[in-house]
Length: 262
Image (tube, rainbow, N blue to C red; front, top):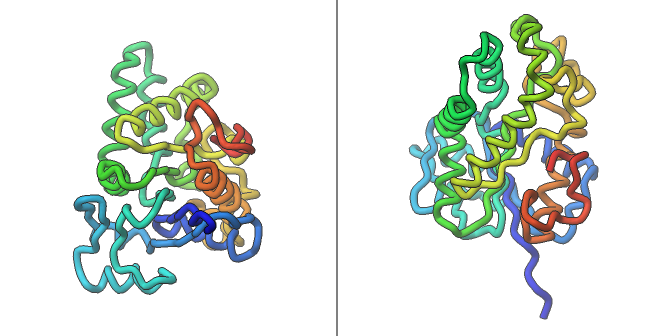
């Protein structure tokens, strides 16, 4: 009798679309896992709550919308049905959070390391998508991974002046530490947080246009990313599911290196 495949769910908002595109286009080998998607656009996340390890829509309309885009027609998401749930995007943003902390640090040597950690912790835990992930993790029924929304594609006109020279000078030293702190904070909540893949980042705090959606300039869409980006994210999720352990553990899954942001 063969062992059952590890059950992997990709849960997210519109940012999970690039993973599904990578899957459909055959950019990632998803063999060896039982893969399922559950998600919808971010505006519907206002109508979700987590109770006892299950994400429930708050109204019938939201339930139907999530069910429509799930191959099994699920109107709610129980952690107990999966071995691993990869929360992707899910309205968890770090770009603005990092900018605020860098801005404070750039004003002078008045911000302690403890305050930096507090700002990052409060900023992360205050987001509704993160609280959904934490609620799933608290049930202890599935391993929970989280990838926040990727940085903006370089560079939205409305954010062109957001990074001052003083802040830019701090990025090489502080950004790795910010990600490490977010990983520590998430670990406290039972979540494995995976940083944005380093190879996709340019200018310290923006995403390489090679990973932008098609015609992103004409569309003014600097937030979403393409199947090539989704392939990087999906590939590491599948690798973790196959290995049965998360990146950051004492033993990393085969092929889970820094080139994909593990």
